[in-house]
Length: 117
Length: 116
Image (tube, each protein chain N blue to C red):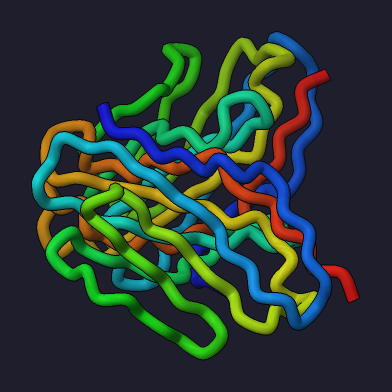
C-alpha cells in the first residue's frame, strides 16, 4: 500500500456523462498530481496542485478540471466524456521540498480505471 | 521539450537470465533527474530509483543495477538473475528544473515477461 488512496478503482459510464475521481495523498504530502495512462498516449501529466493551489498544467483537456481541498484530498472531474477518455487515471503525491524542484519522488496510487461506452 | 525513449517494447526472458532495459533521454536542462518505475500486473506504479544529473555513479540494489551514462544520455536498468515476480512494465522517466520540464516525462515503457 503506497499510502495514496484513489476511488473508485473501476468506473464504467457512457459517452456524454460526467465523473469524479477522488484522491487522498500520502500523509504529510502537500502536492498532488494527476496522470492519465492510455494505450495510445502512454503516461501523460495532467495537472499538479500544491497545498490547494494549482501549480502546473500539462495535457489536460478543457472538459477536465481538478481541485485540491483544504484537507489536501483532490478530485479530478471529467465531463462530456468521449470514448477516447477511457484510460487509467493515476493520482500521485509528493513531499515537496521546493515547489520548483523536479527532484520530487512521486508516490502513485493504484489508479482509477475509467471505461467510457 | 524533454523526451524519454524506451526502444524495447517487449522483452521475454527465462528465469535466472540477466536482462537490461534501455532508456535514452533528451533534455535541455543541465540539472535533471532520472527515475525508474515498475508497473506490475496489478497496475500500480512503484518507484524504484532516482538519480540526479551530477551523479554518474552506477548503483546496485540487490538484483537491480542502474548504469547512468551522461555521454550517451542513457540510464539503463539491469535485472540480474531475473525472477517471475519481476514480470512487469518498467518505465523510465525524466524531470528537469525549468518550466514544464519540472514535471515527470515518462517513456513508453518496456513490458518484461520472465518465464519459469
